[in-house]
Amino acid sequence: MQRNKPGLSFDFREPPRAAVKACEHPGCREAGDYRAPKARDRLNDYYWFCLDHVREYNKSWDFYAGMNQAEIENQVRHDTTWQRPTWPMGNWRTRERAMRDKVFTGGFAFGAEWGEERKAEAPRPKPRTPEEEALHVLGLDPGSDFATVKRRYRELAKKHHPDANGGSKQAEERLKTINQAYNTLKASLGAG
Image (cartoon, rainbow, N blue to C red):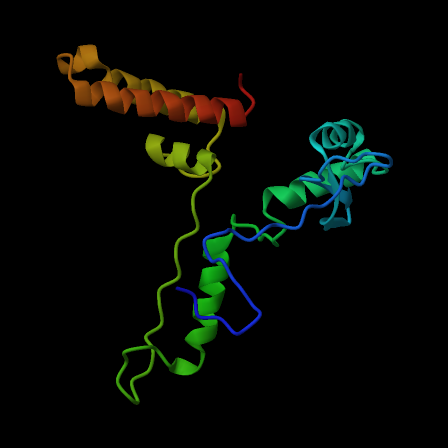
């Protein structure tokens, strides 16, 4: 039993009818069920076509039409990050150190008691170059000439050779390090 106002009748069991759009291709009388973007700069503005005409439209439509190679490359790169800005990640430690320095200026440190000054940190040692490391391995001072390097290498090679140490694995590893240091210095001193 339906209770409606006089003169109105509703049947709630019948689904609502969707408005049917006609295909926008000239002379076509089919239903326009398929959408196609109108232009690259208006991707949310559509033409409505039947299946045959949307296929025809899609075959001839080129998103990159009118763009040169550099513009296409820029568009592709921009799309790979969902059109959001990006930042380099390679030097994050440097940026983090700079931020920490800004926070800790003026003697204030998180967790420090009032009036307690921030203790000065010892400067970090500068990392060694491969040549400096090789000289350290051979026990030589910077500025040693190649003849000194060669003489020291022969001493250490005899001392740490596995045959002279009963086939010791530790002596073998030490000899590998010595050989690598010698080769580094040989290449850098130009005595190849």
